[in-house]
Image (cartoon, rainbow, N blue to C red; front, side, top):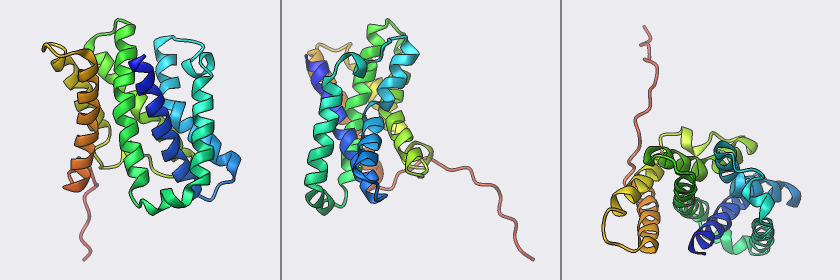
Length: 206
């Protein structure tokens, strides 16, 4: 039940981030729904395909489609309120990767994968919905820029396997790991911490 709550909250967060990007691109309502949909389920769909879990989760549980549809409608109705929050896209995207990272780790554990593979699955689940969203909206995906994005997911997922060795209840561990992902991303943006970018050498003009 707790896992389902995390998954639904992640779906809502990513659907909202998809709506915000789509509205910035001035897409029609159908386009907004499609972008929100692929943002919310893209990472989970790729995860399920890699793990051989077919049909994928959202085909078996209609609650995901209903959740996305309701989220899109409410986001469009209250778009002015969302626009007042200048950092709303960033916040919802950050919350989404935090929630989906742990959802992916849990799926990896259910498949009896090694911890390192669970971390990979968690990162894919968290990041690839946003990748598809950005590609559809003709943007360079955040994961491919200098920003700390996938790195935050990796740190949060890795912390899970350290914390489970401690006498802490599993639900508390989930919450702590989600907060770690969110905190790492927020701190990286606030203090302008970024991964180094490899640029070709600039030839001096003579």
